[in-house]
Image 1 (cartoon, rainbow, N blue to C red):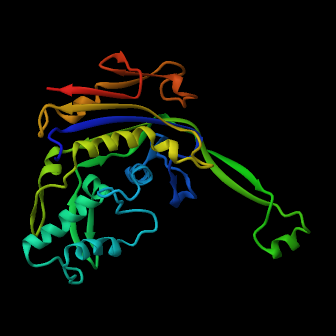
Image 2 (cartoon, rainbow, N blue to C red):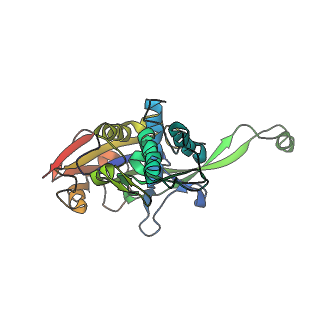
Length: 302
């Protein structure tokens, strides 16, 4: 059964001596707001980690396939719906029959976790429609400015024989990597019961993406544990710190999102506000002026 309540959430995570989200247009330097020098992590980056966690924990279990998985071919993903329903694909078009068009998109929602969660534009050559997902994330932003460091590294090997000959067997290669010494990042998220229950499609009316309470629990689990399974040389120390969930009493909601987000405040316990922090202990995180402990906090909004 689709979720019946609207949610907003505040997710806090930090990085120590790592690169949480490299910018390919800047030599993989950590993403940065040039005006404030605060670090950024894109919504796409966080969604990738959630997808990877679900794929790792659920495997091939029915209903939990991942649509946008690494190295996947989206036309082949879309084709699965046509094959399962015994329908013929008309290039770039959904079936003219509204019920069949709706059935194809609904099949994609039912079988792919990330489609019914985040939505997807599946209007490729094999057209499976479009879904506006009930779960959306904003960009994560560091609480204080960060100072990315460029570190020189040495590899005790070369790639080609020609390089070895030019170095007379010394076989060393110099390289560089960027790190953030420390940064605490905050991201806001939104979960819409209305989009989970009913979606409007340009050629058909769907009965929602079907995002359920059990799917929601999987999302919370992913946020808590996804960094534990995403270690690399550049992301060795990333930690999920706090998840504050605002649960509304209705599908439409009982309070504006921005007012709920303002109830979570982050103050400097050590060091000056606006200067780079050194560790998570430099911050005091409060909910309604009360210090919060533990990871997950659910607040009822009536």
